[in-house]
Length: 174
Image (cartoon, rainbow, N blue to C red; front, side):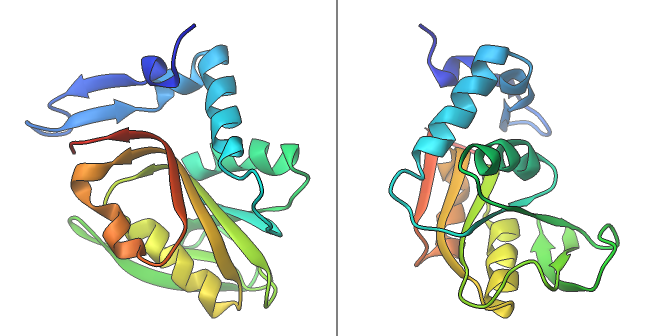
């Protein structure tokens, strides 16, 4: 039987020399890989008491929605600025080269709700750090953050100190 890592395609020197790109699309394109990824991520939530799942576009949607569905929980999307139709809260955060702004509907998280954040990859941690700040601003409490993959060499956990973080697959490098 294949391990989940066997479904992840590694592309050397992309997007630049020295980077080992971990391609999640090879997991998504295989029915067994996708099934295993959802199941393993969902297992990371065993025993966790929470009210809602939050995920950033686009791959946070891909993994978060089926988990929310399976666990009978709502899913809250985090989108790039200008994509949500109702009143929003937003935050600008640093990227490797520049900045980005993400937003959530202002009424998506109720004060005191226990929140799980779901995404495909933790690299530098900047996007998820920004999401935690939006959730805090709305009065939610982040109880767990889960990822399919982690690039440990980029030290993303440093930006997320104090949060309960779990990943299915960990890679030592960048």
